[in-house]
Image (cartoon, rainbow, N blue to C red; front, top):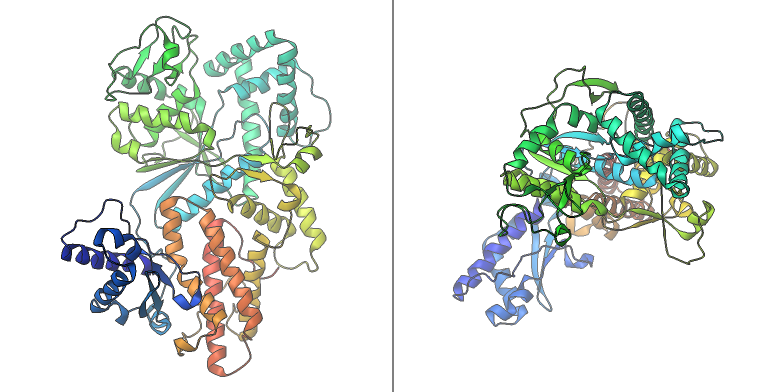
Length: 638
């Protein structure tokens, strides 16, 4: 990548200046290569001269000019760069020689950046199988699926897991509701019936607290797995999971394997993990106090500087410690998650067997066959920020067991939850008199927007605004619009979901990207450079010869953005940040539409037409790669 190579050359120049001054590299100094805001300042820029001023006791401009001389002496300007300039108050700017770039840059579909090796296991979605999915769940799935696509394009082997918590409180509540409450009304899907049932039973709990004891009984029976209650839970979970997979498929989201929590227990994974944990000083049984009888993972962990063994008589003084086994013998979610992660990394001798579930998806099953799942080199979990503590406990358990390398390769991709705007919340019957800026969704209260309902609303909105019925269906466009809406925000941003904004088709939207891609295809077809038939690959037009200095501004801006694709990919891979691809694709589409409006593509001198047709093709190819990473379609027509 150009920016990475440039950064290395700048670092060499900086080191030489520091050596000449007899000064070591400042610990806080980091060479950054940025993109100038003004097009006249070239394609890359660094402010390192200003950062060195205090250390070298020279003015930033003097340092910038010395660095410029060093870089020119290294002849980097004789390669991809046409010029290097020092600019006040101490920037170094670099301009690409577009003739060189055009003649030598041949980015194919392969990733041009550096990547680690080995399998990556990505767990995402992992919705409780007790009701229909809502838009908060969908954000998780879109992030996870996009990360899988991103890492696959970067050359990694990716395996996608969906963990099904079929032993948890939420499923137990729904089973209690089915057995002890009456849900009325018409429901097209079983998950929608369970949505209302789950809300109803939580309301009944408040009116009849004794019914919560029934939840404890159901939890035991689900874990034992042999009673009629266990079968009701199993059938409920399986039916809902099938509906959830169908919902996700509409957004291009798929999985390799479903890992059922009940199989973690049944296959002995937790028993093996329990034995390993007992051998450490980080895991102990509380003998007295409120947590008496519980098995607890100490937050400090072995080697943390704390004394080994259980804490003093007051367990409440160790509130950061995590209960893994309750005094009644019921395992917590985190306990089973620790066992699951030991298996993910291939650290247990026990393994699952698998059966086909649906559409190429395998599922852990007692009657299945062996499959090469798990044994990941890296593990990525897409879970919202509220699960930071349980995720830290899993990492701590790995470290306590001596698996420090695996703990270092366990990544929690945290993200902000989805809440409702006041207008949307009010439309769902939520009391908004408090005047808050957003309102949380609540399954227990039955408040939220179901994925299937949102897709239907968006499809109807798209259908009402279409003047032509060509290419993609309104449902496909709707799914693309929703997916992009949930991906474009920074991961840590709380998405305040507004139904009206989400159904917009202009501005920074997925629909805008699809129209730009289809527009480029139409231009290429008119130029005779597009597809010659359905399913046939595009052939790149001849790379034009031209005077790089004579590029018009819209041409240069578009070409510059195209050149930034590989390093954008690299940054998104390193930061595990899908929103960077959204920002890049939107900016690329904006620049293409500006180019399309300002520069007649098929009119003018032959050399100009040749250049602009090639630019259109290169734009379409690059946007197509971005759309693929984002899980959006690349339409021939709209």
